[in-house]
Every structure is written in C-alpha cells, then in structure tokens.
Amino acid sequence: MIGVLFVCLGNICRSPMAEGVFAHLVKEAGLDNVIYTDSAGTGGWHVGESPHSGTQRVLREHGIAYHGRARQLTASDLSEFNYVLAMDRSNLSGIRRLARKDTRAEIALFLSYAYNKGLADVEEVPDPYYDGRFNYVYELVHTGSQALLDHIRQAHNL
Ligand code: 4NP
Image (cartoon, rainbow, N blue to C red; front, side, top):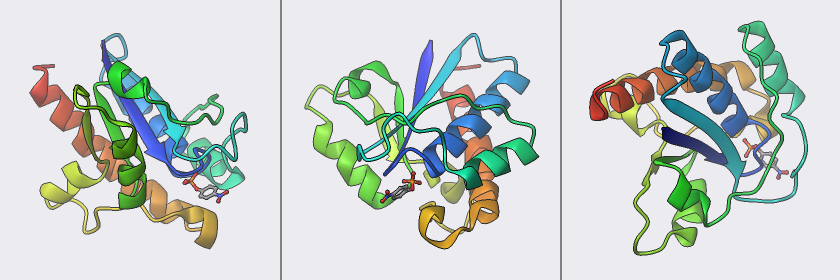
C-alpha cells in the first residue's frame, strides 16, 4: 500500500479537506485498494475535533464524506507514510523537524506538483481559519489533488 499523509497546522481546515478530496479521487480511480490516506496537524490544539464547519460544508457540497478527527503529527508518521505533504512552508518546516536521517518519505509542499505543472499559481494553501476563504481553498485543493494523483500514478506505474 502507498500511504499519503496531508499536514497542516490544526488538522481541522486544510489537511482534512485535502485528505477528503484526494481520497475521493483515489476511489473514483479505483485505486483505494492501493493508496490509503490520512491527515494530521503539526500543532495539537484541536486533537479529537471534527473538521471546521467551513471544511465540512465544502466537502458536503461536493458530495464527499469525511469522518476523520484531528490528530497531531508524530515522528512515526514519517516512517509509515510514503508521502507527507505540507499545506504551507511553515508546516513543511514542522514536518522536517521530526524527520531523521533515515526518513524515506517524500516530504513536499502539497501544491508543488500542480505548481510545477503550471496548474496552480501558488505553492502554499492559505489558511481559511483566518479569512474564511473555504471555497477558494477547495479549488486549490482539488487542483493539487489531481496533480498529486497523476504524480503518484506515474511514480508507481498505477
Ligand atoms: P488548519 O487551520 O491548519 O488549516 O487546520 C488552522 C486551524 C486552527 C488554528 C490555526 C490554523 N488555530 O490556531 O487554532
């Protein structure tokens, strides 16, 4: 199995949205027996909580079910998951702080795959917790998830 972990700060806005959207695309592609997903936050303030109401609304509007609860990123995530994807550069630093020399996970900005293909004009997903732009974040996350799935399919001949 190929494990894909989405990481933001609180694990209630961006990373659960990315997890939900990406898992939905994986299922549509018939790859849910090959690729599994999860999400986590670099911070622990919201552990155990359901996603923010804005993320729940956007997922619901796009017919995507989500049942995850917030949890904090751990060092063992970096040995378990093949891909550990940060929503912004601050999250990326938080992930790298937990990495050891033998960490084999591909650690990257989630949007880097879309950005490198010219499909997104930003490389970071802005935090809707502060400005409420959940619809804009959904568009970025959807584009990012499609490019990420293309990348993984190519890398693993899927
Ligand atoms: P997220 O958004 O990282 O996309 O889940 C945030 C959620 C909560 C906080 C910050 C960002 N907070 O400071 O509590």
